[in-house]
Length: 99
Picture 1 (cartoon, rainbow, N blue to C red):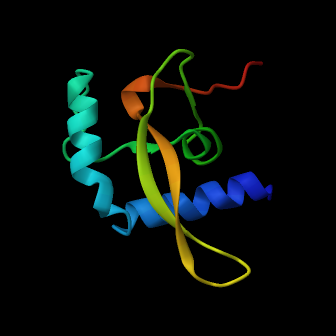
Picture 2: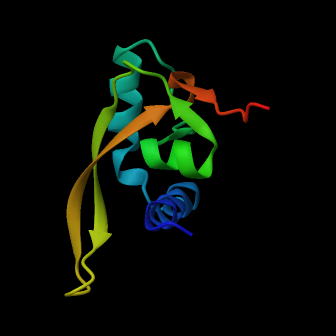
């Protein structure tokens, strides 16, 4: 499995298991400003999660919402903040394999 896909799956697991609720209000309000109903905060993931885990492609020109997440530093074992860009499902299309 590619490193990008592994990281996407780890992020996805944290998101769906309720470990990333700190940004919920921000995500909901910023998407609402764009006319996107993200309440409750579902189907909001990073580009890599949409592409590598969910089988969806973010449409060209779509704008993300920036959030802060925490990742574990492999050297120190401590968590550090990292900025991430997330998209709503309404900004994506299903990836279909062409015959």
